Image (cartoon, rainbow, N blue to C red; front, side):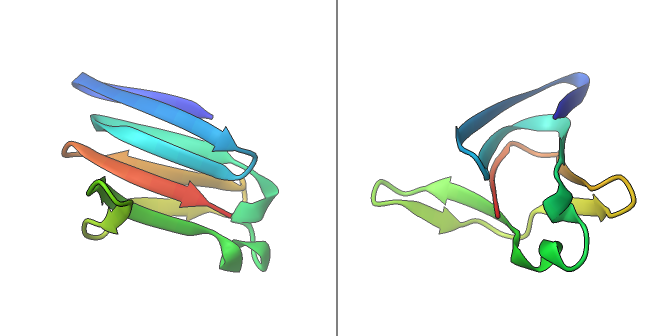
Length: 88
């Protein structure tokens, strides 16, 4: 995993289980590496931009992310303040 930021950007990555990540931040990016980010395994991963509503996570629009299959990497871009759930 790698985290980068621009203009005082920040990110927090919480890793509650083997294949689950909660990424919270702004003006930053997070890259995760795993064999799951290559075809055909990549059909099973989910990336969701979410917000907490008290009873659970609710969808909060489309996340900005990309997959580099040759390096088996998923990159999540956090331009504005947001939370993103990644799982497979």
